Length: 134
Image (cartoon, rainbow, N blue to C red):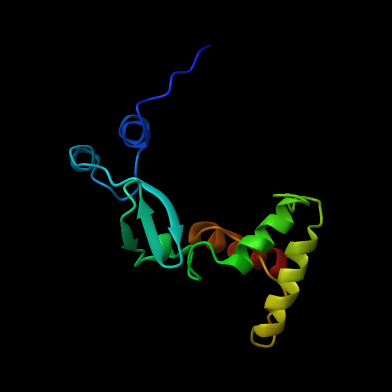
């Protein structure tokens, strides 16, 4: 099978990507803003224009983009392992972070569950409660 590349990111986006919380007919009728990189609190488009990232890329980059200390920590971890499951395995970095979080939370909180969204967090909280009371 041969794959062909579209004319660029804006065309690829228009043809293949569905954006969350976005009226797509309106989105597809507008000129697209293509972000190529970011520095600190700014997003930078493919024309070199800078935009204040007022929502921290949906609150994922609260420390800003391209923070050297964070970038170095990510690179260091990638040299070891990018990701591993916690299904029957121990992850040293996850265990270390869990310990640190327990140390800074109010007394009585002794376990950490890492979740990527609120729905999963609520579901797991219910499952933890069932296990606790069983």
